Length: 150
Image (cartoon, rainbow, N blue to C red; front, side, top):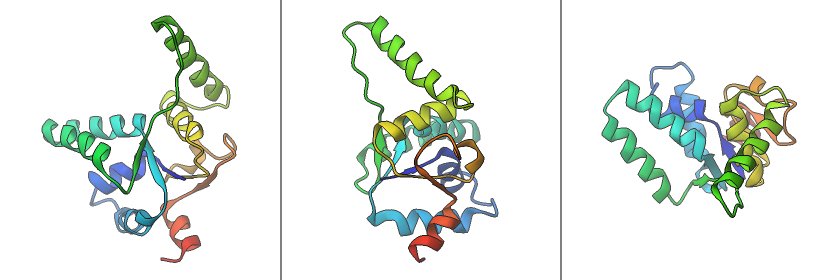
């Protein structure tokens, strides 16, 4: 499965004047036929960006829409707990395990969801945030397109 990072989603949905938009859009179109997913944390971050840049109702529609899409999965990390305290303990352990790899909170949470769902590739424009911190292949949308023949 290919995990799609927040920055790719933000360019695709919000920052259409970004010079990377055309490549990002091509990646989103060409990757439709493969297993791909976005971390719930990326979707929430995207909704926050959208809500700060435009109508809040559009962000909420996007959140719901991604849960209904058949060509991309919303990836949740698995959690097992009997009581609330155990949930927070597990969340802290999982995030701190990735922070120990020298990651910031947002990237650590996103990587947790990707790793919990066996993503073999992470597509991001911020490759330096993930390179050397996971066994998954890290590629930009342009690199992914080049490898998969756009």
